[in-house]
Amino acid sequence: MAIDINKLKTATPTPVTARDAKSTNNAAKAAPQAATANVKTDSVSITPQAQELQGAQAKMASLPEIDQKKVAEIKQAISEGRYKVDPEKLAANIASFEAELSGLKFQEE
Image 1 (tube, helix red, strand yellow):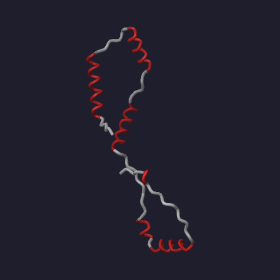
Image 2 (cartoon, rainbow, N blue to C red):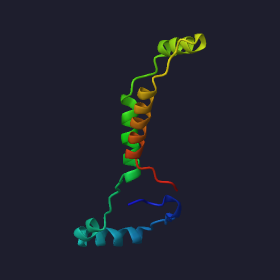
Image 3 (tube, rainbow, N blue to C red):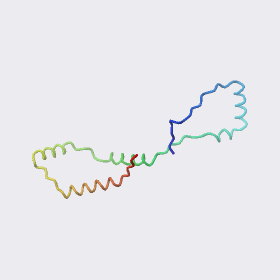
C-alpha cells in the first residue's frame, strides 16, 4: 500500500498544563492496555514495478563492462574495410535481443 505523503495532516503541539498532566497520568495508569492497542507502526512495501526495476538493475550489474580495446579494433577494421558482417549471426542476435525485451514488462503511464 502506497502512502501519499503530500496529503498528510500534521498536528500542532498543544501545551500541557499541570492539571492536564495529572489527568493524563491517571488515565494512562488506569488503562495501560488501551494505550498500547492504539499504537501504530510504520511499514513499507515495494511495488511490483520497483521489484522489476531491481531485477533489471541486478541483470545490468552482472553484465561485463565494455572492452574499449575490442571497440577500437572493430573501429579500425571498419575504417580499413576489413570488417565483415555475418548476416545469420546478426539475425540470431537481434532475435535473441527482442526475445529478452519481450520478457520485460514495461508499463507506460
